Image (cartoon, rainbow, N blue to C red; front, side):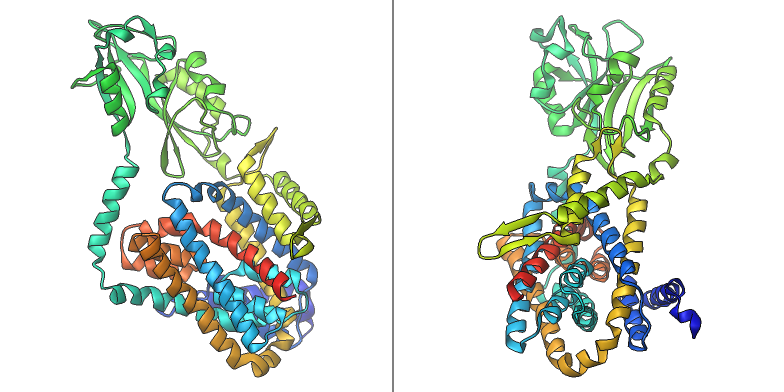
Length: 532
């Protein structure tokens, strides 16, 4: 068939059939995007192949999007309780790495088979990407395809059996976590306080150093005998009997009561002129600047009470940097707020626009980083390669966030599109180019690969479960999110989410996912260096 030798037509056919196969569900199991590689292997077996350039383009798009997504959460994931979650996810990858070395030694797998086994058993496409780049013309994709299915099914079965094996009451686990989260991350609220501390009388707000005590914001002030409250600025002078509205977390507001005065009932509502609204940050020229730099309070008499970013409330401190899509809660006069809205943008559609220049500059930087020679003791000289360089570029640039007029972050919808486009290009190409050897690999390594896949999937899950539960003391609902995140297994997360209606497993999965992605790429590189 002549059309099948047209690269674009072949790509479309492989992707469409792969997507259709990936959407077939058997209970909670589905192949998802990884089904493309199975379709591609079949086409490759019959002699159809896609050009190498498709594979390289897909590889860099996929890995760069992973770096951009993982970067902002990579360092924070090691803070507070996130450290224990990150260690749990790394334990999954590390034990999988050790089991792969053991199986490769025992069954005498070559480098390509070992790398494909590691990526497939831990259901990691980035790991496969690294393997394919480092070991060209290897059997890594075939080994990945053979072990991937059990990797997915094994995680689902393990997660579903775990509550029964540990004899847990899910409701008790939910209540325990709810109490912990309420204590550690209390919501924002406000109190009204009467100023009674004589040390504060006749002092300007910026001279009483509230930030040294707690991250709170003074938004409104009602003078004794006045009918209308005013907005608080750094120049506002406090007087005896002033009534203040203070925004912050409950524990911080209690500190303010001890410092400033006693709480009072009632409301401080504006009866004319003043209003409160939300503004979306969509203007590129203000992105990356701090709230203090914009000086909205002094220039427009508009007060920012808090910032909501990705559904999380943050205190509106002067050093808080604005990100694209941030939602600011502001108080001020109607016309002043309109002017501030023009400065900040307040355009939802703008937050979804894709600018191509930062993406291509980031990819170029990744290519250059990947070519820099590095030297490690006992390992020798090596380079990061395309995958390592592009990943590092994504991590660095997403943390820089903005350089001059260029904003490196891209909207989440755009990032998802780039990642999926890169993934389908990579899987379709690598599958067709490896399909010719799939039957040979099955006949020579079928049983050893099946046994190895079973070991490399189940042993890391079992040992990491013990580490998370008894060493790191992670709550069960978080632990199943850590285990599925460490395996970067979306079907596994679906099973974990079905155990409880609360979002604790998904939150833990999102916390450790960047660490697991980067860990898989790193350990795949180390595996290749060990076995080369």
